[in-house]
Length: 175
Image 1 (cartoon, helix red, strand yellow):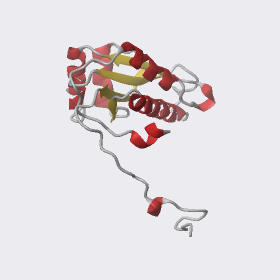
Image 2 (cartoon, rainbow, N blue to C red):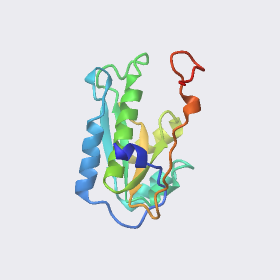
Image 3 (tube, rainbow, N blue to C red):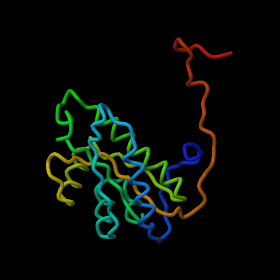
Image 4 (cartoon, rainbow, N blue to C red):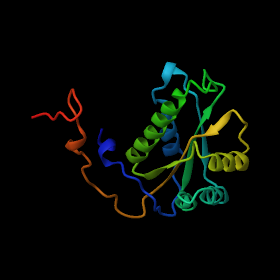
């Protein structure tokens, strides 16, 4: 599980394409994510064309790095799968979160860097992406992952914070 401890959000990339076999392994990892009732309500957009990546960069003030990324993967929910279209059944949010995290972990395993950008539920971002890429109404972009070869060293560190761990009762610390 070294990828769990090595993964960091990388926002600067070398101008080098990502090999297709690496992209496929990243996508395969996404498909291995757990999902409620095994609905697997996801579909994935892979964006590599420069003009498309630049368009995504203009859809959010936090997405500027997508223009320089080698690729962008966009996990989308297919609201027609299972009960995903039911407003009371929003387990798909957890499903897509798990798939996005698997993407990030596999990016690290591949020696690449990436960053998770929030997209859903921001209606402006969702609408802009859907219009640009021709998504039908039942396909909703959930997140955007910019990826590529890191332009610099990946920072290391230990994020464990025992003050945020409670045993049995909130505020109880293990001795």
